[in-house]
Structures are given as structure tokens and as C-alpha cells.
Length: 271
Length: 271
Image (cartoon, rainbow over all chains, first blue to last red; front, side, top):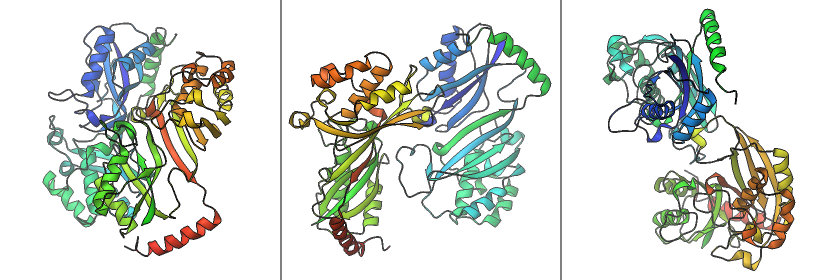
């Protein structure tokens, strides 16, 4: 069996989220189905983590294993031919056996887009949250600093299927940047992992602080309560993007991977 | 009666086009309906021209007349509150009585977006045409020059409801620029007016020249035939944007307009 990493970009608008689940279309299910058709055998896909219903990805990562031989470029082309055009395969590459899309990830980057301009843009309406009150950037930046670092994020985590928060609600956010973009800003979160709905819950809290619904000084108390009901509601999903999943590959692993790549590339992309 | 210019931006994906017509939702009908609700009287809207089903607008212009008094900012806000979020009112301003959204226009700018990159972007899939063959920019630029200037565009005009081509098929394209953008290019057409489907028909012809389906040297013969059936099919509508409608206002008219604006602004935007 050979292992491959696949990077996917998708518009989450019409999906029930990444994860296979009953009663809604999941991105994982569609990609697994496409892979199974092309590789002519049932091929399960392991994602770096799930994205919720309505959440988008610029670069979601997953892995799969197969004993079939194939040309990587042709596989990508075939998958994009089968998949609907709101899911695209960005790249596929061989990885060492010990690679795991979820457990090998060193960090994840999420972006939450806020529209601040009164200028209208009907073409981005599905990808940002309009902010209708005067948003103080200094206050937003100050509030953001409370979330950077290692904290117990129980108050900002919904109870997911996996109950991750119950097991270990400690996470590290290494940065929470406020980045200017045309017509608004986005909040860029980078961390070693995020609990269920954590980014949307933090964004909802930051917005409630900025609109004066709760005082900044109450944040330590909300953290300390370790109680989701003490924090404001989540921001909506449609403005959230999983931007990137990072993997640190040590020098030894890199050597191994290079060798694997060389071996496998003989098959691929020669066309 | 006072006259007003309204500038609209819309995502044409789900509409049957600008113009009111049976059996499909038109942008004009929705905006007229919203205006009539807010102004409490039936208020017809005259557009700068129609856009086809599926075609978008960054800035479509229209005019309407009313004897009602209102605050311009509040009117814009109210209309955007009533309209679906794929149609947005960008601005409303008073204009002289002789202003006409269609006949006063000095030029119109259209953009046709082509995706050339193999990099995927599911978020712009509704707004560009992917080009799957190696497109020669020098050939495209050379072919574009054939369309610049004053020509009889009968071979590139469909027979519309108004039969404009039959009356006067002569139009002037002042520029046809090839503009780089992330992941591709767009063709920017500026002209004193465009016949029905003319931009899409020219784009379809340019693409057929670039993919080698017809020879560049055949263009003069296609123009001379004055026969739509001699030119290649139209490019699809979803990658076309009406970008801007320009109006030249002479110095005297500007004076008049400034006075009208001053008079009317007393009512508006004071809030």
C-alpha cells in the first residue's frame, strides 16, 4: 500500500460539512466516491479534521492509501472531472507511511472574513459577514490578544461528536492576526488544533465585544468558567475558511519522502 | 417630477436578465417593485440597456422619476433592505431632466473573464470561463485589433427584440484590452454601444481563433458577410460583466446638475 496526501479546495455553501453523515451531502463522501471510481476500489479518505456545514476550504488536507499504480496528474484530472465544480483537487503527492492528515499536522490556519465597507459586493456575499456597526480595530486587536497562547478553550468549544473538549480542551493559538483586505478585514487564526466550532465561537465573542454587548474585562471570567453557555453565540459559518494545514517534516522524514517521491514520480506526471 | 440616476451591482446567475419579461425573474422588475414599495407609487425604471440571462453587473445604470421627496441615503438603505442580496444599490443621485440612462450614455465597458490557470478556484467558478487549451496571448491580441474601431457588426449581433442591428448595425469599439488578473485574464471592451449579444459573440470568435478552429485571416470575410451564421457561437453568459456606463456631462449641464444636487441634498444624507 502506498500513501498519498490530497489537498482540496471547496465552496462549502451547499454541503453538510466535510464529514460523512446521514441526511446531507458531505465533501468527504463525494471525494471518496470519486477516488473509488477512478481507483476501482473502495478508498477511504482521512481528513485533517472536519469543517462544519457551510464552511469553506482553500486547502483542506486528507490522506488515502492504495496499492494501485497510477499517474498522479491523471488522477487529479480524473477526480476533477468527476467532482462537482465547487470541490476541486489542488494537488496529490506521495507521503511516507507514517504520515497522517490529522495527527501529523503541526498547525492549521483559519480565516474569518468581515465586510466593513458600505460599498456593496454581491459577488462575495456568500463568503463574508457584513458588520453593520462601527467596528473599532484597536478594541478588536486588544480583545484578540486574550485568545493568543495556550488556554483551556472549553467556554469556546461546542460539544462535538468526538467530545474532544471533554478529553483535552487545552489548545494553543500561536497568532490571531487582523488582516486588511478589499472592503474589510479577515481574522487569521493559527494554532496547533482547534476544538469544535472554536474559531466561530471566538469570532462571535470578539464581535460581541466590539459591538459593546459584553465588556472586554469579562473575558478572563468567561475563560475561567469553562462553560460554553457563558460565552456569546458563534459567528455564522459562511464567512469561515480553512486556509491551510501545515506539516513539519523533519530532515530524516524529508529524506524518506524525497526517496518515495522519486520512486513514485517515475509513474507520474511524465505525460 | 425629479429625476434620479441609480447604480446597481448584481450577480446575474439566477435571473432571466435585466429586462422585465414573462416566465423569469428580471432584475429590473425586482428593483422597480422595491422602488414602488418605498416610494409608495408605481415607479418605472429605465436601464442603460439590458443584460442577458446570467450576465452580471458591477455598475448597471438606470433612471427613474418621482414627485416624492425623500432622503437619498435612506432610500438606498431601504431598497437594499428589500432587494435580495444578489442585487445591491450602489448609489442614487439626482440628475437633470434631460438625463436618460440609455441615450445619455457616452460609452459602456464590459469585461469577459477567462480562467487560464490550472490552479483551481471553486469560489470564482460562477464568474469566469475556464480555457482548457494553451491560449496564445499574442494571437488573441492580434485578433482583438480587428474589432477595434467603427464597423458593421451584423455578423456579431443576434436579432434582439428591438431589432437594433436591422436599423443600425454600425458600432464603435474604442478599446478591447487584454488585462491580466489572478489566475487568468479579462477582455475589457469599451464602446459607444453594443448590439444584442455582441460582446459574447466577439469573445466566442476570439476563442475559436485562439483554439485554431478558424483562421485569423477569415475575420474580414466574416465581417463583410454581415451574416450572424458566418461567425462562431457566443461565449457563455456567466463570465460577462457590465463593468461601467459612462456619461459625459458638458460644463453647462454640470452647472445645472450641481444646482439640482445642492437643492436636493438639503433633503438627503443629513442623517
